[in-house]
Image 1 (tube, rainbow, N blue to C red):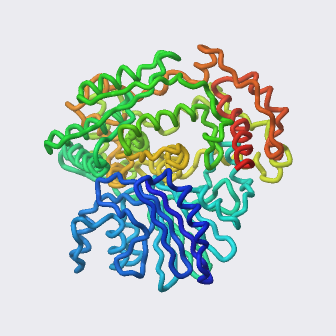
Image 2 (cartoon, helix red, strand yellow; image 1 turned 30 degrees about the horizontal axis):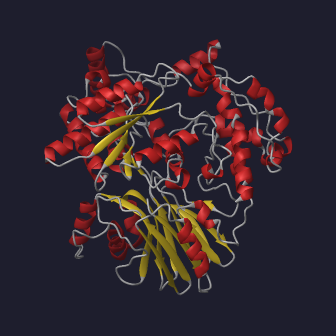
Image 3 (tube, rainbow, N blue to C red; image 1 turned 90 degrees about the vertical axis):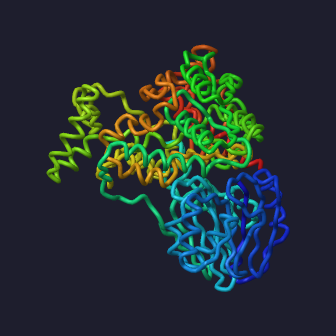
Length: 611
């Protein structure tokens, strides 16, 4: 994923060329294929290029089609042909070799901001109108690409890499204390507009930032729509449409040359691999696809490696099993080479980074099976209510009765009844307690006890009538936070992660598919890959991780979080370090991940202070 940064002077002052040179040098890890620095009146940009494909890419940015509006960013569009045809129907002449960046510029030239909601793919980019001196910045709906910005002094500074903005001397190193509070409570910050630093904002997924004459405004420009369900005459049509969409999502994400996939023994990643292999055979095209799987059998009875290996053999693709015990938990947390842009609490950060370094030797692009659970593990109860309120008795009989006749049971309702019953009879697992090691003055300043209660609440209202929890999960920003930790700024590896099941066209369709039977236990996906995967994998129930890996390390290798590192001066304003030892001494799998957050933050603060 290419790197980019820009400096816009509100008063038209020339940009600092030395700062641009430093930014470009610091972005080199993202784009080893080319570096480009450009200055204009009151604006400066730097870009480092990573060639991935499959579509043509602009190796030099910013680029323009009219020498007025310039684009700089990290862009991979889906639906290129549809966009090109729409432009040609409105009189534009667009060559088939047009880059994704040029397609966006042509669309903006033709329709202005009205074209933005129709852009689909993975992107974060800025448009600079040099005549109107207006800056527009966008980030895709899932948040697979990053965008940060700071409005300081008379400048707006932006980049897809947080630490690049911190190179500007006028950007303060002061932390965002709300962000730190959320990190200690939740492990991430659900306020998607914040970063760990007070002066630097994060553009949330699906949002647009506009700046003109120094005035910055942010608004949502796209979201997942709420529409009535698709009603098709033949059940086979649901599978055919889904397969066509998923196949296109996979093909659009094929890189130039070799491809990699993180393969588990579950249905999602193996289905992506099966679709890729089947499509290559259909097109009689070569496919250099290699699978990579973490093997934790030295820790516990891990069923994933054997099942992933079985899937790879059936698909006739090579697979590499990577040991999951090469590094101890929390190893490398104090290493400056492992510094992350924002706080993290991943005890297996070093293992993950080594895995990425291993994969990138084969390919610059790796697929993930992310996104298969949100909608495909749907809820039957909201759908039943939806049909009942519309008096669709026949549909209820066909859907729910047909499911019962096929499986001999009622589809899982997932209406929350079991949880309410368990709460009523007192059999629920004890909730996590508010962390007592949080510094009391910090807690009072940020009202963290109230914030804790807010974060523990399940929303009482959901917008989507058919897939309420799936729709809410897709809009929560959780995927963007997960994808961010696998991004080059965190891993320091120029490996681009692509997730076909998070394709916007696929998700748009799934949100309209009747939950029963298609989104019950991933029935639609299971039918889609019938004949493409061994039934042992295709029909395998959704299976959580057998055991907590931290607990397994403690049991098998006597790992312990002690001794704790010495506390930094900075951590004392957030954490009562003396109170931390007791919960870590009594650690269990349920609380250890929480109680390690202060330790991780302590390491991160030390690294930030030394940077």
